[in-house]
Structure formats: structure tokens, C-alpha cells
Length: 131
Image 1: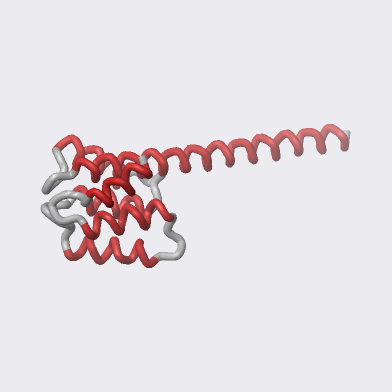
Image 2 (image 1 turned 60 degrees about the vertical axis):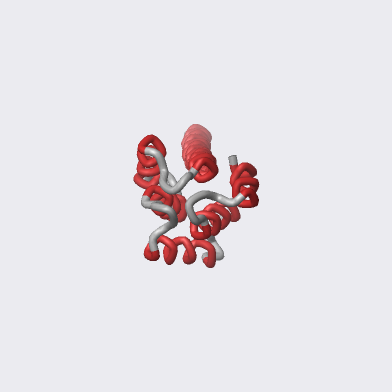
């Protein structure tokens, strides 16, 4: 009887671990997809995002599976009009200085904070690496 309880406990533990890994994998994929989407939009950014880009950016910003940094970057790019607003630039600078932010998040935030009308050739190269 004790053996069955141990086996059942092991099965339950295995299922719980697998479920946790599956959820973590989904969150990681969502973050990668969001990063790639933002990078693609920023490469083609010309004075402001298109309506379709704004829709995609709002979906990223509103998706709680994305990190707060990615949500903030998506919002800043969504609001972009020739450059990011002062308030969005402040939020982007906080990401750049955040030791817990990923390199990709810092790169996106740095480029978004520095764009004036369109991304520079160097910025486009860095963004292409994130795609």
C-alpha cells in the first residue's frame, strides 16, 4: 500500500514539474516572439508606426505573458511620433539601467529611446539580430 502511495506521489510530482516547464516554455516563446515583432516594427518605423503595427504593439503591451519591460517598450513604440515621448523615454531609460532586464530588452529600449524619425543603419543592424 505504501508503495502505491509513493508511486502516485512520484507521478503527481512528475506531472506538476512537466506542467511548470511547459508554462515556462510558453512564456519564453511569447517573450521571444514579442521581441522579434517589436524589432521588425522598429526596423520599418518611419515617423510613426502604421495602424497594423500599433495594433500588434498594443497586443504585446496588453499580454501579461510578456515581461513588464517588453510591455513598456511596446507601449513606447506604439506611442512613437517622430520620437518617443519624454515619459516613455524615462521608462525606457529605467529598462536600460535595470540589471534584471535581458540584453534584448535593453537593446530594444536603447534603440527606441534614441530613434528620431527612423532607426539609424547601425540600429537596424542590431534590430535585425533580434529578429
